[in-house]
Image (tube, rainbow, N blue to C red):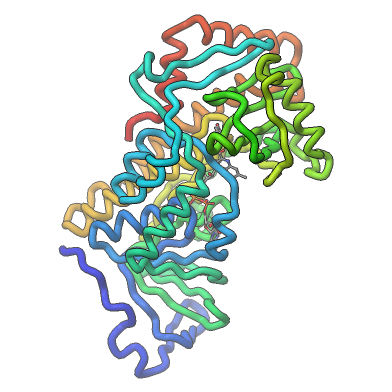
Length: 421
Ligand code: FAS
Ligand code: PHB
């Protein structure tokens, strides 16, 4: 087996109209079918990173993205990168700006009852995280793909997956109004929670595990200096709050809100007033407020789909799992899936398919540990609607124990900076 970049259109494919029998109807592709080794659905961070890593290994891929590049880059999402994610971005040759502009954090603050304490990642486990927004990671990946002539089709409609268990899988889709076909060896479903790939696994095979939290996060991005040099996760009887950042002049704040709160309910001033009530007084006094340049409410859920492989289809990232952002795991978990899948595909094309056959089991082992940590941290830091005063005291006792126990802090630290791949 050898890896090489394939010719784009199938030879002779343009000489005749292909009558392709897909189940009950024939499909007339108006354009010549193209072929690639790995078809990637979704041009978010996981799809782009997978495409980049495969390219560097001499493996051909095509990315089909539903939205425009600008739309994808307009999303404000994750902000913290685990060490493993940074290493993977270095391997993908897209870490130059990350190292120039990202901020190294060797710890984080937790706060309760108007008092904060620091979890020192470096002292506890000799580790760190990097604060660098998902938007910038995605931008760097797009730029790298463009520089290496990566095949990314935007504004793609109606992607459908075919013949996943026949050894001859292919995708059909519409681009600029014309029907297209993409033949491939494998399909990577990097299309997020609402994508099409997970739904292409037969209902009798797919198992889904879910816990929806009875609250959401209202997030604000503001061109203001961060209130703290490191993140502050605050447990408060009024609800959770998080102080984060994107740079020394761009801050990211969150407060827990009821699950069905309308965004219109929250003026900027209402947001700032509530944030100040929930973070320690010394931080509230330092807080620099300003107009929101992005404001949105994200629901919180834990979700895992098993298996993460069906025939030629491999689920990656949010297509397979969702975690509440409390543990800063979402993006990082997508990247660990990319780590396992790209190394397994490289091995496959070199003649060793064991890792590919074990992908689902390998990826899920780490997914569930991250789901557990995110669920645990969410349970410790948020106020639940049916919570009693007893429950609040238990949360506060948990945090006091964490403040005074090196063993407890070490558990949090090793999960937060990222368990090994
Ligand atoms: P993505 O959802 O990022 O990308 C999937 C891509 O597939 C999208 O571009 C979509 O347009 C495309 N797509 C979907 N269906 C398609 C179809 N049928 N055909 C073609 N393309 C299709 N994680 C953290 O670690 N920290 C956070 O603070 C955090 N905050 C978040 C806030 C919000 C509002 C959301 C929704 C998520 C947040 N996350 C956070 C998690 C988030 O960062 C994800 O983990 C990360 O985007 C996962 O990347 P992908 O798996 O690439 O999925
Ligand atoms: C963010 O900066 O957006 C962020 C940081 C840490 C989290 C969640 C979100 O746990």
